[in-house]
Length: 189
Image (cartoon, one colour):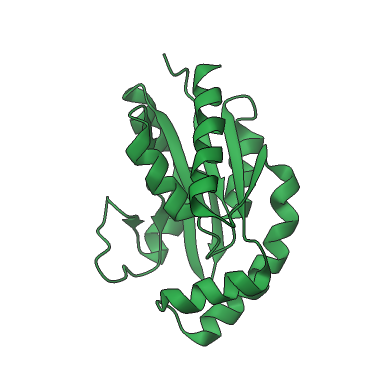
């Protein structure tokens, strides 16, 4: 029924992709969130197998060697993030569409690996200044970390052209409508 489709949302940190992803998951019953693996420590209320699959650095590297990832990347201070093949298989066995909330490099890699099965959406902040303000308002990382993320965001914006669609997230309700329309068309193809 779903013929193994994938939907990728990518954006610089603070652009609003996670908010859009949560909206899509709540709106479409045929779409299931793909849980990423990471070697970083869980933050706050995060739960293993719900928010991420938390792996040690050693275990993550062993799984890389065993070619268990569709894609992976080392980001933000030596932490690894990636998508396990088993996670996508789990979702496809449910006859559902896998939805990714993933960094721009990982998103571009998934689109390259599955070009005809993937709808890729890049969520663009209205400006770098607004992005920095959003990160400050969240209050979940240090000013030093915010500066690292803003610097990374500037280079990530260069990836936007590699995605099927770009949503400039200036107005959240409008962005939700655009995302809904794009995904509905993709599902109905």
